[in-house]
Length: 173
Ligand SMILES: Nc1nc2c(c(=O)[nH]1)N[C@H]1C(S)=C(S)[C@@H](COP(=O)(O)O)O[C@H]1N2
Ligand SMILES: [Mo]
Image: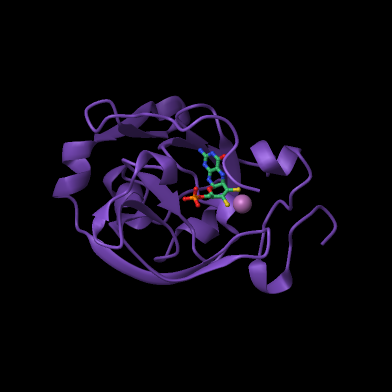
């Protein structure tokens, strides 16, 4: 499946990424903050659930670990899951372990160009080792969860984890 709902038009000035820290409040980063952070070039394959793959794609952005460190989260995130939310309301759930250690990024360039709104610009998440529905376009925030809970497509029958090598497309795969 592809994008659900309309293309969100989020300007760089309006874009902001927030980590919900529960009782300790929250921490947010603007476009300028993002630009000032250490940038990583990511060369990867992407797998959509509906058979196609995008081979050898080039992205540029910031490792999720840099946000966690910036939020003072270091090694001690006690929750095992998180929910990623997009502008427009799309959500997807992920294990915390799958967004740490260089496995997930907030990216703002695709093949050397700013990411277009259609593909989630100005900033989307990519989690290349999982099916592409786990890579939220127009990423807005994350919050931690003690227990796993389904996001948008997961509520609609798609797999809670989504490993393309195990072909985990649907519940029960
Ligand atoms: N916010 C948001 N992110 C999303 C989606 C969506 O509907 N809304 N669809 C997902 C799915 S199913 C896919 S295959 C990819 C599509 O990304 P693309 O449009 O850049 O190819 O975005 C993922 N991220
Ligand atoms: Mo998809």
